[in-house]
Length: 128
Image (cartoon, rainbow, N blue to C red; front, side):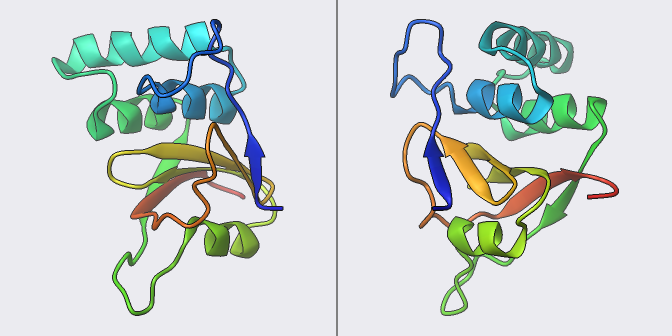
């Protein structure tokens, strides 16, 4: 199964727009609060919102991640499930435009099943 329900929000809340916090906490191996703090600090330094793509990228790059683009046009639509099948090992952060989720060893860790979404880019660490 390419999806595992994951929500480490300390109050258990869902649907509050904290996907970047959850995704980074998984990718970086830190708790929700630390991921939130890193995003806020980077957002402040960049004068941008903590959930912006640029801020998320800044935090990931700070931790040694690199970005690669994906073709998100149909009819050759490449889903997150396809990505999971093609990347059975390693840690990746998928960007869907308005959502991010982390893939660990071919399984999306997310609060909802985003396997049928079309990622536009992903972050990875060299050597994976």
